[in-house]
Image 1 (cartoon, one colour):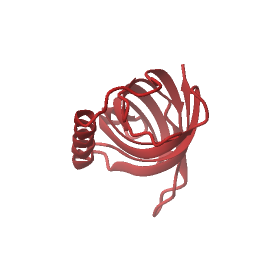
Image 2 (image 1 turned 60 degrees about the horizontal axis):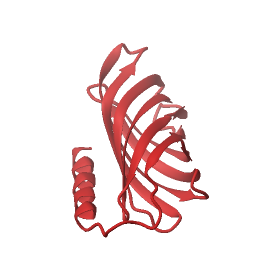
Image 3 (image 1 turned 90 degrees about the horizontal axis):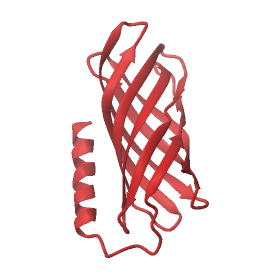
Length: 164
C-alpha cells in the first residue's frame, strides 16, 4: 500500500511539472461520487458488498486533474461489517471523454462486531467515461484494509460521478 501511494505521488509530481499552459475547458469544481461495490467470496468468506460515497474538489491542471475529498464507506466483507472514514487524493489523466485515475486514502476504520478499530488504508484504480459536464460513469477496483485486524479485501464496482 505504501509503494502504491508513493508511485501515485511521483506520477502526480511528474505530470504537474510537465503540465502545459491551460486547458480549453476548465473542469475544476465540486463533485460527488457514488460507488456500490461487490466483494467476491474467498475461502470461508461469503459474498460481500458495500458503498462508499465521496465528495471531492477537483483542480483541473490541463493535462491532469488533482482531486482531494472525503469518503465514508460501509461494507460487508470477510463475514464482518465495517465502516471507514478517510480523506482521499485522486489523480486523473483524461483522454478525451475517458478519464483513468488512481486514488489513495488514509483514515479510520471500525469493525463493530469484532470490537476493533484502527488505521484504514485504501488504494484504487479506475476510469470513468464523461457523458456530459455533470455526469460520468465508470468502473474501479479497490484494495483496502484496517491495520492490525486481518480485514483486507479487494472490491470491484461501478462508479457514478455528479458534478455539483
